[in-house]
Length: 468
Ligand code: AMP
Ligand code: ZN
Image (cartoon, protein in one colour):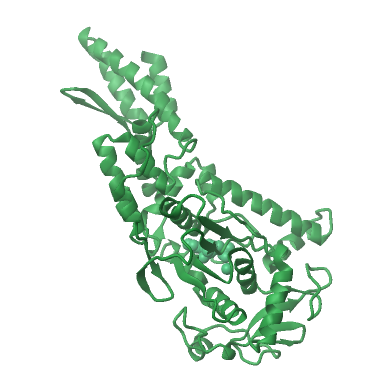
């Protein structure tokens, strides 16, 4: 069996992956807070996990993997957006407007991630559907002396968990010195974090032993992962921006609520998508959404290729040049594999590269080798491990297939013109190709052509209409 190696944030080392139960490999990815459209950075963990899940299913079996990604559908930002709509005169109660906002955002999220070829997880729990589990977990933490109620709030007592800070590699005292911790009169220690907080009468809230309120963000993931994957599971992931405090707090909650269980064996963190050296984020305003790119006509498959081309542990930028290169490569691969059946299994070089801490660049290099050798069946089966060349995903490249017919017709017309010594006509075809972004090379075996990144299908059609 292939050995997968992953860099575990917990040990800061690349380790052999060994699932707790190879017949049921379990992963949890922190999902979005559903108040607005996903920006491109938010797609990075989704795509990294999508390839990881494809690899795990290949190695352990299609039914041997359970993948959970949550929706955080209770949050101040959601409430604020609903309030803004109500202030603008939208009909319905605040509760209705909150519900509308989360439903519409989840719909967008599905549509956008589907467009990137990301398979839906096995479970997509919404936080609001797991409030009883959260309340039970918080009660357990209080009973075990790891949490305390004060002023309608429940707080986790970080000093009760000596390992607090181990995942992110900080001590509590360093954190207090360095972090923007919220000092509040009801906190015993400034680092103590909220498990439960009171809700105003018009905001979403649930009855609890501590009064009407709502959960803190961190407890959601601890409760939902335990419910759907068990107290111990294999891989927990998210962007590196979640390492502290979110994941540190999840570890504290889960390990204290379920002593000895172990929680996640491997922590996998992707680095950030950046814009001019800064993390792309809603709060910095330096973001564009996945939908913006799709609307500009960048195919989802091209976005996926670019996002996967940089190793997940390295920061990356989105550039138009990368998109143009990816588009040209994918057009070529679609052309090569059109009408071809995939090989029965992916090429070992692609699996070996992915198994080595998801070395995508290595996997893509192996795909180029297959394309270079003209091994279209193996290319197709192997590219699908990366979620590329999936059935139905390459429709955008069909424009290239139609183009192929027109280009062949024009090349025949050019040969006829040359034979008839009608050089003006032959030159017009040559210039027309250049203007449409079709590169033609004459070789002893005949003309070879390729589509340049700026390929313009309309110009090609016009040329064919004029001359062919
Ligand atoms: P959020 O809705 O902000 O909690 O983010 C959802 C997911 O996107 C989390 O796993 C974040 O770590 C991840 N994420 C947010 N911004 C970026 C970024 N610029 N690059 C990569 N991942 C990001
Ligand atoms: Zn989480």
